[in-house]
Image 1 (cartoon, rainbow, N blue to C red):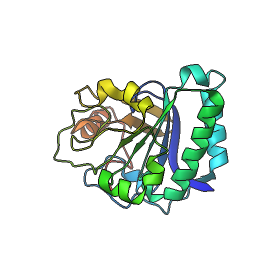
Image 2 (image 1 turned 90 degrees about the vertical axis):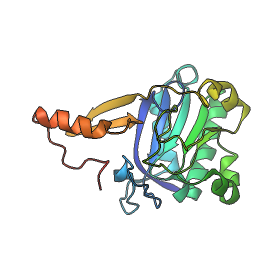
Image 3 (image 1 turned 60 degrees about the vertical axis):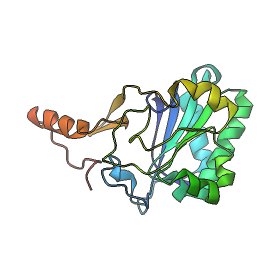
Image 4 (image 1 turned 135 degrees about the horizontal axis):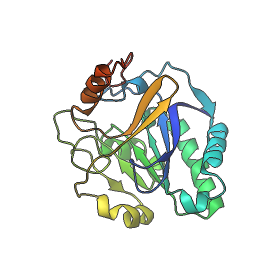
Length: 219
């Protein structure tokens, strides 16, 4: 089974509790207005690899102390549920790895589809997740809740593992944080920006002579 991903990174510390593996899937049919990850929309971009290759990468970056250091795995995009078979296979592999580690790591997934739609169409996949952040991003909504782009998005705690780990963040406001990464000639970020943050970043960089050629938050 192959999966088309945009990128993967470790450690991610701003999309769920603890030090996490982040996996961003490529392709999104929803295309929410104002989305800051428009580079993940195009499903024709081919960054395919096998589930086994992705799991090998997870093992490598987590290292020998994965059981102690790895808090969880966050899957985003793009839209993960636009690749339902690949997503299901990935979750099977991650769950088997968790059992092998005898670990309490949790699996969180983002989706722009309504929770009711996901329960109706993809209940079997939801049963493999610990936590889910569903609902479309709404650009006119405020951004005050942990790990969510707009306040209409909910944090669904699907297992006892998630209920114990996520309860402090389920409904309380929290400051949003960003990780900024440098990769060759590319600058990219992880996390949920506040309204206008990316435009401010672009302006400040331009004032320093740094020009953004293909900002991900503009099509």
